[in-house]
Length: 384
Image (tube, rainbow, N blue to C red; front, top):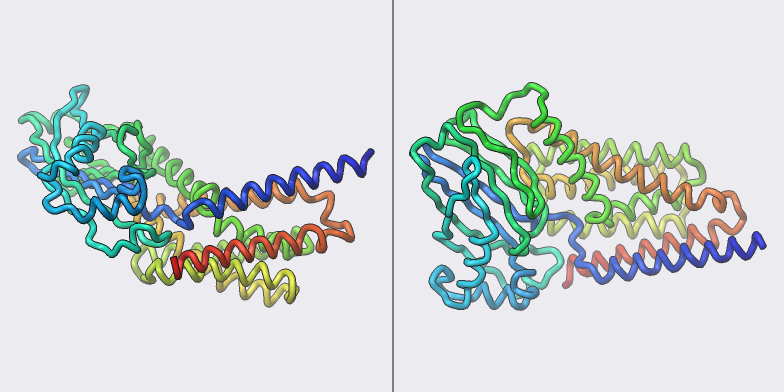
């Protein structure tokens, strides 16, 4: 009876793994949310509000081919074919001053001028920029402003929103999802205080959440790298040592790259990340390296993965009022997701780790599957 239950459990795990692989293969190989919507709102002393929205219109256009056709339109602001897109983005972009909704209108549209291959690539994200303007009333500094972007328009999430007043001490940066209002922006006081308050805590929690989402479900390449490490160790102590080295390495390059000390194109980093996973998977099967060598390799790959994290974080935008806090919080979210993933897999497989069939039935096929999927991503990121 016990052996039957064990076999049933293996079948369930196998089916779940197969479903996950098919899902990953069917999904675009975008390891990081570089096509997220970015919104910049600025207000001058006279109350003139200017907003720019950088948006990926792939979903709005029904796919990359449709998006490319839209990008070929001349004078999109006055083009009848593009008018519905403008109408939808105006209707979905909500500007509130206290409890009153104010109208803002699209005054300019800049479509991406890129080759068609970029619109269907898994590594390029053509962005369209909309400029919106509104005139605030004379007493606007005595009131508070907030924005919201509804799901009636297919904004890519999260939405990185930055609001600034022409006075240097008034700014607000937040990540939002669709249908979520930003915190109230006050014109009469600085929002850049370094004191810990409810806004600071909300910012940290938001960045922790986005860091975790950057592993599961939006960063399966990083997740599979960690799972590859899990399949290649013989003890929990080894796993903790390797993940610690990986963490220290990607934390270092994440900080350096986010501060602008290191800049490497995503067209280089993304394929390298995929190759690092291929290496770990194949090394598990054919080399079975010593712990010291594996640690050195993992630290080196951690430096590469950190550049990938930094590219995503830089694209999201980091609030100038709490730069370090946001950076640390994002990294905490990444680590929590990694440890949570490893913890779950360890619990699910702990009963088999000391069995003689562990390598032949679980570690070897799992490592080969991870390597094969990562190689597919490599080809997608370099050839497709």
